[in-house]
Image (tube, rainbow, N blue to C red; front, side):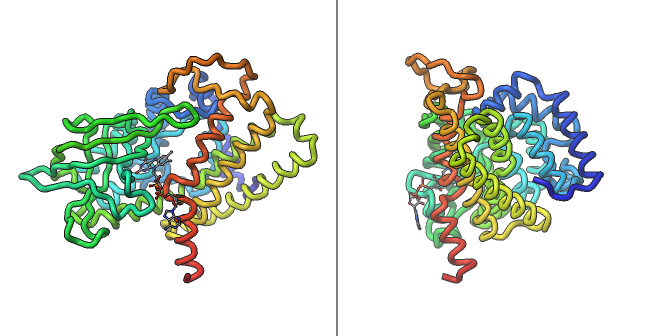
Length: 393
Ligand SMILES: Cc1cc2nc3c(=O)[nH]c(=O)nc-3n(C[C@H](O)[C@H](O)[C@H](O)COP(=O)(O)OP(=O)(O)OC[C@H]3O[C@@H](n4cnc5c(N)ncnc54)[C@H](O)[C@@H]3O)c2cc1C
């Protein structure tokens, strides 16, 4: 897409592209292009290279280590990262808990955690959902009871992405069981190595492991790990979830996928029916890219309903591009081919059919992306938010 880029923006883009090409290690780029969940070590190596340039978290305020780039420049950087196959950084840290900490955290928390996030020294996971609290998050039951200078936390989280590699979890816990559901919740930072924390994998249909159950059994969490005020956690969570939805449009990822699809499916594009589907997707993607840019250019936190629109549409496009890729691959698209590096994938005894390198990972991605319309709040929930806020229903 073209945004009538100025000469300065074009130069910015050329400069960042050249730097990424010169510095992204080839083996990491290859794994990234094949679309697997990035390993901790790949994320560490890449984040530290970016951090040495001051580019690890471009959207953060400059005083906490962000860049002074314009929203358009930040988006151009994202496009270049995804096109190059750079590993996705620790999003729970960079995009979710980081902004909560620099907005609501204590000075001690900012000093303790923000530099380690920027340098990928501390990895985070998000402990919000529970077995009976997903869409209805405010019904969560994990309890935190004050005992001296600690909270004692007991309960279970589920679907916790990347808990298997995380050092810390930011969790919503119930600190006042008597208050109405939203009023009795606090936002706690929990050390994943603390006694009483147990992580159990949930293997997903793509044969990968990125989600987990997390059991918390009398885990002692120092009171200094409470973010903001006790029982105000719901408002910090709403701030975080709005950011999460706004980022979930993931248009730079879909753009990179579409470019790759158009490269390997050149022959299939001669089929007018298939070409029409690709064009339809590209038009929808361009429309969403403009919508995302309008939101980020406003430099204001996205409102609930706007973030919901971006999340809803972005999640659908993530699915459509992967499904079109599998369709274009024909029989080769049926091969699952999990990450050959064995990143946390289940041991699968079945022989793998040989397929061209460009076919690797697409079916796994198409299957995993059934989740894009569920995580971060399901698309039905986003439609409810839009119906209420925009249509007044
Ligand atoms: C791959 C993956 C990664 C995830 N990562 C994380 C993570 O890192 N941390 C975390 O805390 N959570 C995570 N989640 C959990 C995710 O946020 C929840 O799955 C999601 O919010 C839905 O909750 P649920 O699974 O309990 O489904 P439910 O809430 O039980 O919903 C079941 C179905 O009912 C529909 N539904 C529910 N309520 C309504 C309603 N009021 N109106 C209309 N339809 C409704 C839903 O849309 C859904 O289709 C992840 C989930 C997945 C699949």
